[in-house]
Image 1: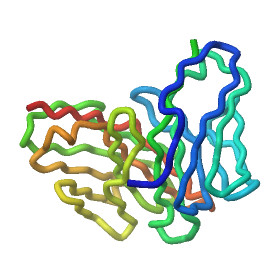
Image 2: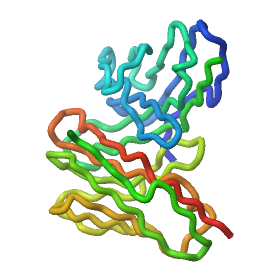
Image 3: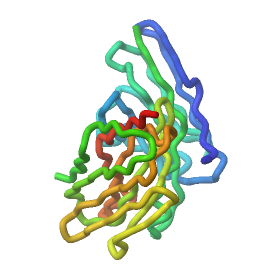
Image 4: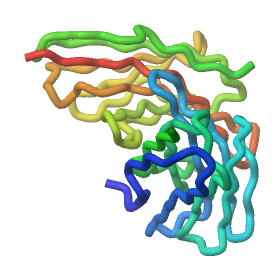
Length: 116
Length: 114
């Protein structure tokens, strides 16, 4: 099993609250990713990072922000949560390199966020 | 537009039976194709990976095939078990970017009944 962790696993909060979803990996991977997944739908990339101090927005527009101050840590923050943010958030990491195997992304267990 | 389409959307089979899941993609330029298994409430876990030159790959009771000409892949599960109940996601990677962008299908939800 991959060594990538997400906390909390489940979060129910009220509208307007600030939240941070934590993601940590112990594999020393340079690349890290955040995905959003709704039931029965595909994963959508919302943020990614090539390494420390590197962050980029993904394909799906998101009001969340991310930071990458340490290699192993890639937290996602919502300044003011809304019901439309209710979803599952998955964090992943991968090695750098040109070989196909290096593209494998290892996923954390996810955070199920519900905003009331 | 790069897309990954999976069928069927859902499938129910009896324990011990075999099944085959389908994946069609339009991702180009193609790098590799993976099948992931996602248990309810968990993150996806890679089952198999195939590059352009490979047309079959096995992992225990899971056998994946790839036809790069027709851009189709299948995942065959033999002698299904209750623990096979999960969503199976086809993921295609392109080689047109340094990120190695992944394109995800919506998954096939497999339920195995005793």
